Length: 100
Image (tube, rainbow, N blue to C red):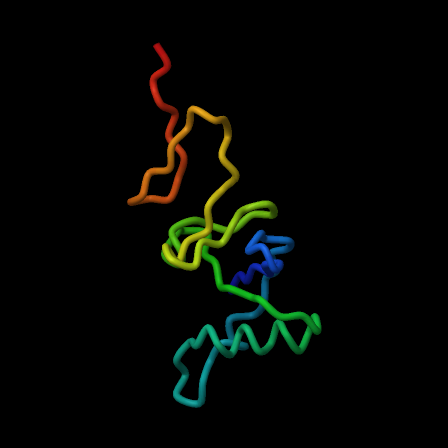
């Protein structure tokens, strides 16, 4: 199964869907994200799809509703939990900073 996130004009995830991995296969049997995006566009009639992965092998983190897609980092980033949390650039996850 393959997972795709729909993002709005502000790059915020508004839904995540699961599609059959066969929809991603090209004529040589290789998975192509572009084929999955085309399938989602056809199925839902909407644009702005990005593939995501439970194991973080695609775009660092599995997308969730309310997450932001950062084009420059090519990553899905969860909402910041609190002001004192900082983004770990290597994992694109939030880390709490020490407050003294």
